[in-house]
Image (cartoon, rainbow, N blue to C red; front, top):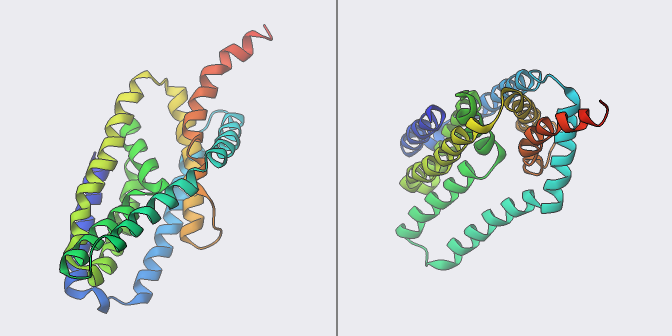
Length: 237
């Protein structure tokens, strides 16, 4: 839960900064921070991916997970969910202070919660207490909340409730789930997640647009493959 608490704190700090200085924050500073975070995300992802003890498991997990994600249209589903809530909000009420506040809350909640970084970071925090990815996400969200709150007001700060419940819930679930996973399963799951995080870094650096959410099933496939290895070996004994 440490990563989520850091995330909440950064969003609150960013919201306060956005209300006071928002539009005066230099664009070049935002850009260089984003690039620095992209490079750091690449490093974290590579460190995690290199923990693998069997590259074939990671390969299988990423390929099968990606195919599964595309069949299930996970990326399209998440994007559609965001568009649905945006549309509902836009057509629900006339313009005014209340709608302005609600728009800030909903927009920020969607941006901060829907995405591989929130899911992967929370899982990693729950499985091993490693909150590095959530710490990077916290800085990104902090800068984003400056921009949002500068135009949408204090409603952005209320999104911390959504972030806390969503990421905190995933972290607690992962912590409970870790009790039935072996060390080998966690290692390969971490490695598969690391490759997805490398993709996040490439996206932050605008190197390549990757349908990252489609690869999320790899986090389930990796430990499943580890569990099946003894069965495969038995056929050749």
